[in-house]
Length: 266
Image 1 (cartoon, one colour):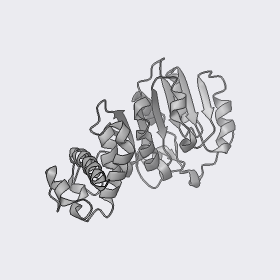
Image 2 (cartoon, one colour):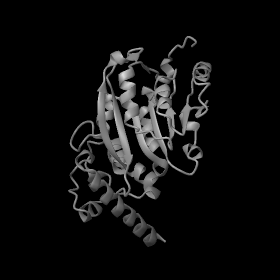
Image 3 (tube, one colour):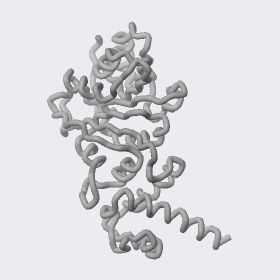
Image 4 (spheres, helix red, strand yellow):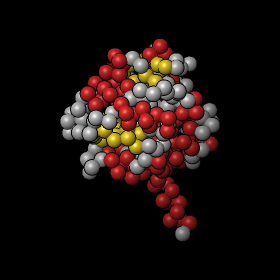
């Protein structure tokens, strides 16, 4: 295997603990019928363990050109492995499903982990299981509850569409180079009947983002008081005090309010 240099611009920290890698792959519950997609192959440590579980197909996505020859040489004997030489954000995951669902995994680049998580939600209809390694701080946001600093727009958005489980913390010593922060493994399972329909996902995302902007401001500074009162929410509350159900109810009423206003104006 050739010499590989990790690059700060890609947020690369290679996972080198065989034990942690096995635990991540265990969470995927791989069968011979599965199509697995890995974001950020790197030099292939996680990739190799996935292939040992014999999925129908493993598709690796890697942006770093320096890694391509290393990956291709290491896995040249695996007919069920395909490498996509692109940025994850330039890949349409729906083109990889073979009309079924996929299992998505990866040791996510630290500098874009939140963006990848949010982007992942828009593929909810083709996802069976998602298992990611992220910064512990990001993982804690995903399982956070109202009235805490870690409760954010991303918390509400992803908890609306996924059941999220914090699997384990992963110390710095298990990476090369060592990151400045502790990492964590998280598992996301798509909800069969999310509180907000998938067709309204983009609008819901924008709505929550608007509510969480200037999060210390009261809700009445962002929405009409009559709308808030209609769903039983105190207008003097702040975004961080609402739970996921509150947000879904408020969004439903917001859509009705917008439609009513539109009709009155026409």
